[in-house]
Amino acid sequence: MKKVTKVTRQRKPGRYNVYLDDEFALAVDEKILIKYNLFKDTELSDEDLKKIEDAEFEQKAYTKALVYATGRMRSKMQVIIKLKENEFPGIVIAHVIDRLEAANVIDDARFAEEYVRSAIHSGKLGPRGVRTKLQQLGVDKYLIEDALVEYDEEDQVAQLDEKVEKLMQKYARQAHFMAEQKTKQKLAQLGYDSKLVVAALKRYEAENETDVDQEWENLDRDASSAANRYRQYEGWEFKKRVKAAMFRKGYDLSLVDKWIKQNESEMQ
Image 1 (cartoon, rainbow, N blue to C red):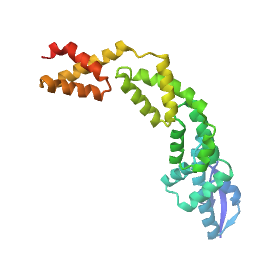
Image 2 (cartoon, one colour):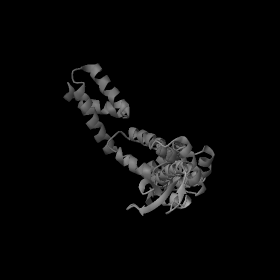
Image 3 (cartoon, rainbow, N blue to C red):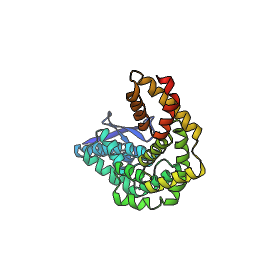
Image 4 (cartoon, rainbow, N blue to C red):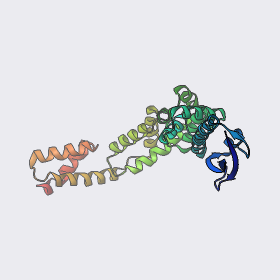
């Protein structure tokens, strides 16, 4: 048997040094100190010391997980991954997760609900995007669907009207058709309902007439660049390549023909 002869407080809050038979033996968390009565004159067997060391190791994992999970809300899987990265064994991780769930520190149902509310407020992701992200974070699919009930069509419509306007302005130097396609693609990537995206674009078009002068300016710039790129070709081959390049960029071919006709003399 060994006897606790001294206990001193570390500079780090909640940590203590324990001396056995006048020699430093181990450092422990305050909870371990109290749980195992590690005060002066307490006698400890080798078996006691092994239990204390195991408990201290688990407490270390718990403290690390607690700090990680309370900095901001985390899913259970995120906490498990964090503990694995710190090389804690599976049995310790399982105990820590049980303790965190019992203390309501981690709760995937609440996590999913908060994540959905945050997505609605920030407008960064549509419902499908939120679902994908929560799946990646290890949240159960049924918890995800329950949480997504809060993300209704009205929320999406309000977000889409704002996003469509910003994206169409972002792509304003491209062919109008291409700007629409890229806007649809971006919003699909963010997880918005495709029918609502199309409806939002229609509302935008109804409120904003296509800028004919801007479309011509964009075509003139892009077609001039293509003409310079294919200047080694002549006649029909030259026109074919320029038209193909402009078609890929989304320009109306009748408008491209008009540009070629107006600039034909300069391209000879």
